[in-house]
Length: 275
Image (cartoon, rainbow, N blue to C red):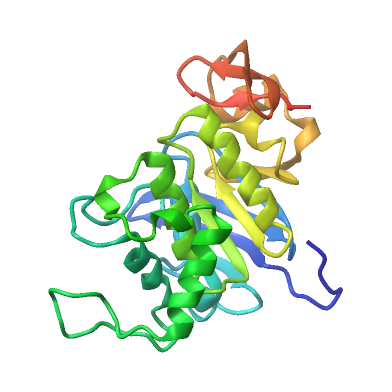
Protein backbone atom coordinates (compact mmCIF):
# COMPACT_ATOMS: atom_id res chain seq x y z
CA UNK A 1 0.00 0.00 0.00
CA UNK A 2 1.53 3.28 -1.07
CA UNK A 3 1.15 6.33 1.16
CA UNK A 4 2.28 9.92 1.06
CA UNK A 5 5.25 10.99 3.12
CA UNK A 6 3.05 13.41 5.09
CA UNK A 7 0.82 10.66 6.48
CA UNK A 8 1.05 10.37 10.29
CA UNK A 9 1.75 6.94 11.79
CA UNK A 10 -1.34 4.76 11.89
CA UNK A 11 -0.49 3.96 15.52
CA UNK A 12 1.99 5.77 17.75
CA UNK A 13 2.44 4.38 21.28
CA UNK A 14 5.05 5.86 23.61
CA UNK A 15 5.98 4.59 27.09
CA UNK A 16 2.57 3.09 27.88
CA UNK A 17 1.90 1.40 31.20
CA UNK A 18 -1.34 -0.28 32.24
CA UNK A 19 -2.48 -2.31 35.25
CA UNK A 20 -5.72 -3.90 36.41
CA UNK A 21 -5.70 -2.74 40.01
CA UNK A 22 -2.35 -3.77 41.44
CA UNK A 23 -1.61 -6.26 38.66
CA UNK A 24 0.71 -4.80 35.98
CA UNK A 25 -0.19 -5.88 32.45
CA UNK A 26 1.85 -3.58 30.20
CA UNK A 27 5.13 -1.93 31.11
CA UNK A 28 6.83 0.80 29.08
CA UNK A 29 5.34 -0.32 25.76
CA UNK A 30 6.32 1.76 22.74
CA UNK A 31 5.28 0.97 19.16
CA UNK A 32 4.99 2.88 15.91
CA UNK A 33 2.97 1.38 13.06
CA UNK A 34 3.48 3.19 9.77
CA UNK A 35 0.58 3.97 7.49
CA UNK A 36 0.21 1.06 5.08
CA UNK A 37 2.02 -1.47 7.29
CA UNK A 38 0.85 -5.03 8.00
CA UNK A 39 1.88 -5.76 11.61
CA UNK A 40 1.49 -9.01 13.52
CA UNK A 41 1.26 -9.07 17.34
CA UNK A 42 2.09 -12.34 19.09
CA UNK A 43 2.58 -13.45 22.67
CA UNK A 44 1.45 -15.86 25.39
CA UNK A 45 -1.98 -15.86 27.01
CA UNK A 46 -2.23 -13.05 29.60
CA UNK A 47 0.73 -11.34 27.92
CA UNK A 48 -1.28 -8.15 27.33
CA UNK A 49 -2.38 -8.51 23.68
CA UNK A 50 -6.10 -7.92 24.26
CA UNK A 51 -5.36 -5.08 26.67
CA UNK A 52 -3.16 -3.39 24.07
CA UNK A 53 -5.94 -3.64 21.48
CA UNK A 54 -8.44 -2.11 23.94
CA UNK A 55 -6.04 0.78 24.54
CA UNK A 56 -5.66 1.35 20.79
CA UNK A 57 -9.45 1.26 20.39
CA UNK A 58 -9.91 3.77 23.22
CA UNK A 59 -11.81 1.31 25.41
CA UNK A 60 -9.16 1.64 28.13
CA UNK A 61 -6.85 4.49 29.11
CA UNK A 62 -3.16 3.96 29.94
CA UNK A 63 -1.98 4.73 33.47
CA UNK A 64 1.08 6.36 31.91
CA UNK A 65 2.33 7.09 28.42
CA UNK A 66 0.69 8.34 25.24
CA UNK A 67 -1.28 6.75 22.39
CA UNK A 68 -2.19 8.34 19.07
CA UNK A 69 -4.16 6.55 16.37
CA UNK A 70 -4.25 8.09 12.91
CA UNK A 71 -2.85 11.23 14.50
CA UNK A 72 -5.65 11.53 17.09
CA UNK A 73 -6.48 10.27 20.59
CA UNK A 74 -7.91 6.74 20.29
CA UNK A 75 -11.53 7.63 21.10
CA UNK A 76 -11.60 10.28 18.39
CA UNK A 77 -10.01 7.94 15.85
CA UNK A 78 -12.41 5.07 16.51
CA UNK A 79 -14.67 6.10 13.63
CA UNK A 80 -11.82 5.29 11.24
CA UNK A 81 -10.96 1.86 12.70
CA UNK A 82 -12.41 -1.43 11.52
CA UNK A 83 -12.32 -4.09 14.25
CA UNK A 84 -12.81 -7.85 13.99
CA UNK A 85 -13.13 -9.47 17.44
CA UNK A 86 -11.86 -12.93 18.30
CA UNK A 87 -15.26 -14.15 19.45
CA UNK A 88 -18.52 -12.73 18.11
CA UNK A 89 -20.26 -10.67 20.77
CA UNK A 90 -23.74 -11.82 19.83
CA UNK A 91 -25.83 -14.97 20.12
CA UNK A 92 -25.36 -17.13 17.05
CA UNK A 93 -29.05 -18.10 17.13
CA UNK A 94 -30.22 -14.47 16.99
CA UNK A 95 -32.58 -14.19 13.99
CA UNK A 96 -30.63 -11.77 11.82
CA UNK A 97 -29.39 -11.98 8.26
CA UNK A 98 -25.81 -11.68 7.07
CA UNK A 99 -26.66 -8.46 5.27
CA UNK A 100 -28.02 -6.87 8.44
CA UNK A 101 -24.96 -7.92 10.44
CA UNK A 102 -22.74 -6.21 7.88
CA UNK A 103 -24.98 -3.12 7.83
CA UNK A 104 -24.33 -2.70 11.57
CA UNK A 105 -20.89 -1.51 10.53
CA UNK A 106 -22.59 1.57 9.04
CA UNK A 107 -23.70 2.88 12.44
CA UNK A 108 -22.23 6.34 12.89
CA UNK A 109 -22.51 7.07 9.17
CA UNK A 110 -26.09 8.34 9.38
CA UNK A 111 -27.84 4.98 9.77
CA UNK A 112 -29.94 3.98 12.75
CA UNK A 113 -32.19 1.33 14.20
CA UNK A 114 -35.67 1.04 12.83
CA UNK A 115 -38.77 0.80 14.97
CA UNK A 116 -40.01 -2.51 13.61
CA UNK A 117 -38.57 -5.24 15.82
CA UNK A 118 -40.00 -7.92 13.58
CA UNK A 119 -38.45 -6.55 10.41
CA UNK A 120 -35.08 -5.42 9.15
CA UNK A 121 -32.73 -3.18 11.01
CA UNK A 122 -32.61 0.27 9.60
CA UNK A 123 -33.59 2.60 8.13
CA UNK A 124 -30.73 1.84 5.77
CA UNK A 125 -30.16 3.98 2.73
CA UNK A 126 -29.49 2.75 -0.77
CA UNK A 127 -25.87 3.76 -0.28
CA UNK A 128 -25.68 1.70 2.93
CA UNK A 129 -26.96 -1.40 1.16
CA UNK A 130 -24.65 -0.84 -1.78
CA UNK A 131 -21.71 -0.53 0.63
CA UNK A 132 -22.73 -3.75 2.39
CA UNK A 133 -22.95 -5.59 -0.92
CA UNK A 134 -19.54 -4.24 -1.97
CA UNK A 135 -17.94 -5.29 1.35
CA UNK A 136 -19.41 -8.80 1.12
CA UNK A 137 -18.26 -9.05 -2.47
CA UNK A 138 -14.73 -7.99 -1.50
CA UNK A 139 -14.49 -10.80 1.06
CA UNK A 140 -16.08 -13.24 -1.41
CA UNK A 141 -19.24 -13.74 0.65
CA UNK A 142 -21.90 -11.89 -1.36
CA UNK A 143 -23.77 -15.15 -1.94
CA UNK A 144 -24.37 -15.38 1.83
CA UNK A 145 -26.17 -12.04 2.18
CA UNK A 146 -29.66 -13.56 2.68
CA UNK A 147 -28.51 -16.34 5.02
CA UNK A 148 -29.22 -16.31 8.75
CA UNK A 149 -26.06 -15.67 10.74
CA UNK A 150 -26.56 -18.83 12.80
CA UNK A 151 -26.31 -21.06 9.73
CA UNK A 152 -22.75 -20.05 8.83
CA UNK A 153 -19.58 -22.06 9.28
CA UNK A 154 -16.68 -20.59 11.24
CA UNK A 155 -14.87 -19.52 8.08
CA UNK A 156 -18.00 -17.96 6.59
CA UNK A 157 -18.71 -16.07 9.81
CA UNK A 158 -15.17 -14.70 9.87
CA UNK A 159 -15.61 -13.32 6.35
CA UNK A 160 -18.89 -11.70 7.33
CA UNK A 161 -17.33 -10.07 10.40
CA UNK A 162 -14.52 -8.81 8.19
CA UNK A 163 -17.10 -7.33 5.80
CA UNK A 164 -18.79 -5.64 8.79
CA UNK A 165 -15.46 -4.03 9.67
CA UNK A 166 -14.83 -2.91 6.08
CA UNK A 167 -18.27 -1.45 5.39
CA UNK A 168 -17.52 1.51 7.66
CA UNK A 169 -14.72 2.56 5.26
CA UNK A 170 -11.87 2.41 7.83
CA UNK A 171 -8.28 3.52 7.40
CA UNK A 172 -7.00 1.02 9.97
CA UNK A 173 -8.08 -2.62 10.32
CA UNK A 174 -7.47 -4.46 13.60
CA UNK A 175 -8.13 -8.20 13.94
CA UNK A 176 -7.92 -10.26 17.14
CA UNK A 177 -7.06 -13.90 16.36
CA UNK A 178 -9.09 -13.91 13.12
CA UNK A 179 -8.30 -17.57 12.35
CA UNK A 180 -8.47 -19.04 15.88
CA UNK A 181 -11.46 -21.28 15.19
CA UNK A 182 -11.02 -22.25 11.55
CA UNK A 183 -8.93 -24.89 9.81
CA UNK A 184 -5.55 -24.37 8.15
CA UNK A 185 -6.85 -24.12 4.58
CA UNK A 186 -9.31 -21.39 5.53
CA UNK A 187 -6.58 -19.65 7.54
CA UNK A 188 -4.58 -19.32 4.34
CA UNK A 189 -7.59 -17.94 2.47
CA UNK A 190 -8.25 -15.31 5.16
CA UNK A 191 -4.63 -14.13 5.19
CA UNK A 192 -4.47 -14.00 1.39
CA UNK A 193 -7.53 -11.75 1.58
CA UNK A 194 -5.86 -9.59 4.24
CA UNK A 195 -2.78 -9.28 2.02
CA UNK A 196 -5.01 -7.89 -0.73
CA UNK A 197 -6.71 -5.48 1.68
CA UNK A 198 -3.28 -4.28 2.83
CA UNK A 199 -2.88 -2.61 -0.56
CA UNK A 200 -5.25 0.08 0.71
CA UNK A 201 -5.42 -0.39 4.51
CA UNK A 202 -3.07 -0.47 7.47
CA UNK A 203 -3.59 -3.83 9.19
CA UNK A 204 -2.75 -5.03 12.70
CA UNK A 205 -3.47 -8.68 13.46
CA UNK A 206 -3.10 -10.58 16.72
CA UNK A 207 -2.19 -14.23 16.15
CA UNK A 208 -0.66 -17.22 17.94
CA UNK A 209 0.82 -18.49 14.67
CA UNK A 210 4.15 -16.74 14.24
CA UNK A 211 5.50 -18.76 11.33
CA UNK A 212 2.28 -18.49 9.36
CA UNK A 213 1.81 -14.74 9.72
CA UNK A 214 5.50 -14.18 8.95
CA UNK A 215 4.69 -14.99 5.34
CA UNK A 216 2.37 -11.97 5.21
CA UNK A 217 3.27 -9.32 7.79
CA UNK A 218 6.11 -6.81 7.54
CA UNK A 219 7.05 -7.04 11.24
CA UNK A 220 6.17 -9.13 14.27
CA UNK A 221 5.62 -7.40 17.63
CA UNK A 222 6.31 -9.85 20.47
CA UNK A 223 4.34 -8.86 23.57
CA UNK A 224 4.68 -10.33 27.04
CA UNK A 225 4.08 -7.34 29.34
CA UNK A 226 6.87 -5.55 27.46
CA UNK A 227 7.09 -5.35 23.67
CA UNK A 228 9.89 -6.02 21.18
CA UNK A 229 9.50 -5.84 17.38
CA UNK A 230 11.31 -8.18 14.99
CA UNK A 231 11.64 -8.32 11.23
CA UNK A 232 9.93 -11.48 10.03
CA UNK A 233 13.18 -13.07 8.81
CA UNK A 234 14.79 -12.70 12.26
CA UNK A 235 12.25 -14.86 14.12
CA UNK A 236 13.90 -17.98 15.52
CA UNK A 237 13.46 -20.57 18.24
CA UNK A 238 15.35 -18.56 20.87
CA UNK A 239 13.06 -15.56 20.42
CA UNK A 240 10.03 -17.83 20.86
CA UNK A 241 11.45 -19.45 23.98
CA UNK A 242 12.21 -16.03 25.47
CA UNK A 243 8.69 -14.83 24.64
CA UNK A 244 6.76 -17.82 25.94
CA UNK A 245 9.10 -18.67 28.81
CA UNK A 246 9.28 -22.39 28.07
CA UNK A 247 11.00 -24.86 25.81
CA UNK A 248 9.69 -24.86 22.24
CA UNK A 249 9.81 -28.07 20.25
CA UNK A 250 9.80 -27.61 16.47
CA UNK A 251 7.97 -30.01 14.18
CA UNK A 252 7.46 -29.85 10.42
CA UNK A 253 4.11 -29.02 8.91
CA UNK A 254 2.78 -27.75 5.61
CA UNK A 255 -0.23 -25.80 4.41
CA UNK A 256 -1.51 -24.16 1.29
CA UNK A 257 0.74 -21.11 1.39
CA UNK A 258 4.04 -22.88 1.99
CA UNK A 259 6.06 -24.75 4.59
CA UNK A 260 7.28 -23.85 8.04
CA UNK A 261 8.26 -25.22 11.44
CA UNK A 262 5.48 -25.49 14.00
CA UNK A 263 6.58 -24.73 17.53
CA UNK A 264 4.72 -26.98 19.94
CA UNK A 265 4.78 -27.71 23.63
CA UNK A 266 2.17 -25.73 25.51
CA UNK A 267 2.64 -22.28 24.03
CA UNK A 268 1.20 -23.26 20.62
CA UNK A 269 3.33 -20.61 18.95
CA UNK A 270 5.08 -21.05 15.64
CA UNK A 271 8.53 -20.22 14.41
CA UNK A 272 10.11 -20.06 10.99
CA UNK A 273 9.26 -18.49 7.67
CA UNK A 274 7.26 -19.75 4.74
CA UNK A 275 8.73 -19.48 1.34
